[in-house]
Image 1: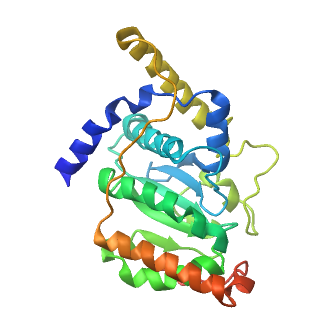
Image 2: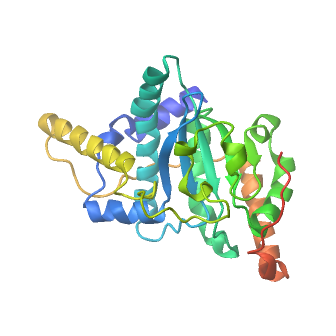
Length: 280
């Protein structure tokens, strides 16, 4: 696996990905509007806390290559900048992060996003393993619970232990591991939903300090690279996506099958209902 990862990095020039800004800035803004992810703060143990708007991400404003490039850049920035910074702040080695996955808005039409999500998952599993300590699932609608019920038995025990499905926005449970200031905006309200208060910038937004720092960092790296190799070419990177293993392929096939079943049955009428879901 290590050799495959090293070869993948070499073949796709991953070491230089942070010197390849997505241009123009309006395109990057569009990606931020449709691939919802952001850094919201740090856990009580000093780990970075990332929020993901799984249900409301649409992946429809740019090519797959641009979305994948943005995701890899965020991974590399996490490993090269965020985690070392967290280690320095906490006075101890920090090697993992926490992820809060918001399922608000998840519908049966998510079937159209399976390919993009599976691509991102394959890249993470095979080339950035063990970087996430816990995945917290919040605001889960019926369509998620139906898929989770059939997928859960297929997961390895070490994977199941990382996934915690919380009731509603999961505020009380999350406050056990992070302070209120680090809660994602969609967890701060007593009720469910993804709205943020009017006095704070949405953590997904291009205007959020985290994304501004990340984008400026990439542009600075590009300028340094330009001095040695010349102007950077515009356009997206074409990254070879690793082939998922048999376990992951079976999981994705099961999710697709379950979504098809829901689409054909009465699940569509219940797809927006909130239900109580037992955790792993």
